[in-house]
Image (cartoon, rainbow, N blue to C red; front, side, top):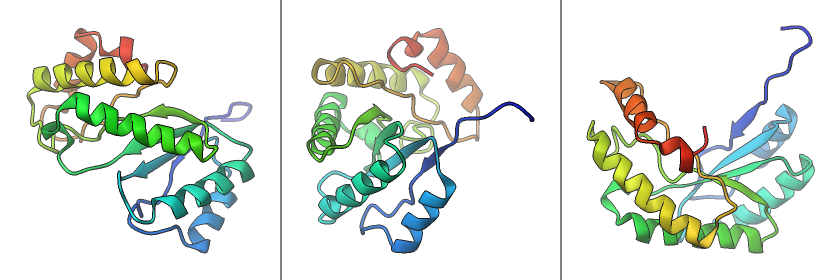
Length: 171
């Protein structure tokens, strides 16, 4: 639409087990995104190399908003307070590397990654996570994880909204 501009956030390639290739980094630079979302796994051997690459990329793009999405299999099976502390440590590592983590997404597609359509369980987990995470990083915005668009996922969004998750997880 002429005269308007959408914000363009880009999820960096999901290569959390290896550093980014030159072609991947050049591709991101060419797209000139307004913000970056980075998938990261705790404890990866290549994490240090990737943080250096992400810092250079972030600097080259003019330091746009940087959102971290820590990854592990079946996050909902974790104690939410333990996962919050793990995520807080990841944010700390990124900030110590000079990256301004602007926000955090604590998981993804809970409706297919262990949570099914138990919206109440997911909501309680997200509130518990937020309480612990915000104790350590109160100024880092949390973002609701996406739900996979299958089954009754719209019911999940309604349940989340009806139970006030937008207060802790601004949309």
